[in-house]
Amino acid sequence: MSTYFTADPHLGHANIILYANRPFVDRNRDLDERGRWISRKIARQRANEMDETIITNWNSIVRRPDDDVFLLGDFAFCEDANVYLKRLNGRIHWIHGNHDKAAWAVHHKFASHSPLMEVKVNFPSGNRLVVLCHYAMRVWNKSHWGSYHLYGHSHGSLDDLQDSLSMDCGMDCNNLFPFSVEQIDAHMSTKTLRPIDHHRGK
Image (cartoon, rainbow, N blue to C red; front, side, top):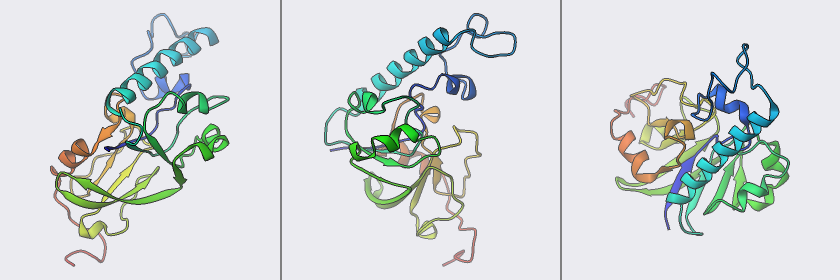
């Protein structure tokens, strides 16, 4: 069994291609002079291309049904999110995002769900508490003791603080792939923890 983390796939959401600069648009042919899709047909076609890439990427590394995937919000924009759930490997634990109406409609299909999760994970560096939320936090449970914080929502637009054991695990930060525990741990190893509140030095 392996563990993976991701956020913000926005399956079925054509406009996220434009907002997050995803590589599924020919800006000279697919958009009008205002930078909008020239037609719903083109928008749907590009969203389908994005969906297929994300599903293929996901399943290329999440290979077993008992692999755990922690999905930190903004799953899908569609009529029936179960269409995507049936195609994605692993046990998906959903942390609520702000664009998750479709996910709420099938919330019982996820392995678990919550607005915030705290899980203990076996990283190459050892067992650690990981605090999972759709939104970035400055401090979190046991942050001054070296717990990790993973978030989404910002699509890689926040500064990656070098004195904080936190990171954006969204798909736009990893070429539209989920993050493995090895990738998370390697990134955190480049940081130096410096608590910022009254726990400093404790």
